[in-house]
View 1 (cartoon, rainbow, N blue to C red):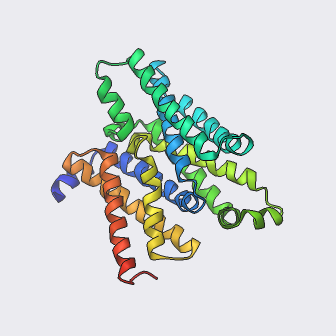
View 2: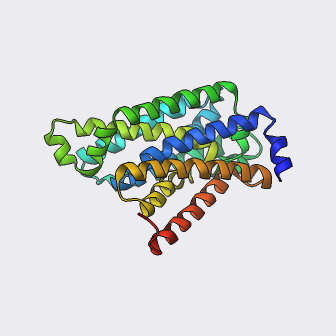
Length: 279
């Protein structure tokens, strides 16, 4: 296996996949803790389905870079979910469910009516559960993923104190003069960007697990926000690396393999917590 791995690591497309996978894992884990604590986990799932619908339309329209349509549409829906859920008579979870199911159904309908290839089932399955497209990334896609990841990590570090305040006590944060609505909106937009970046890696149905599992695992080991965030980032990166390498060696789907490794890591952290090993 080591010889096979050394052989694969000689190819640039494998290195690109590892770089992008690690960056996506890092970005998703940083906000995963905030999403879980704020009970925003369903927003990630809803926006993932929106991204699927937008990706289906971009595929039918033969966009050279599908992210040009998928990214703005997903960000727009993130704004609508946050604003609409607070200003309308519909509850937030109802808005998420409505947009999520509607986008998923619309995307599948568009792909059926205007099939871009003869293998419709394969295209849908790859979009929903991820595919080997992470191994066929172009240099442009790699550079774009690196740039967006650097911006998101830098943003999280710069506004860490504000994110911390909004996560635990919105009323106190608002009393100190912090614009809580703008912060929540920024979090939703960043989540939308992470989801679009993750589409090639884990597919739209597995993105929520990719975001939530490392955060839940870290919460079983540590109690402070900083420690949980750092542990979540480390676990997410390790699981992504192990998942991608395992999928290459075993020929399994990349997204499913990474999520399976994340689930196994959660089981280990849960056991450590139950036996009192966690701090």
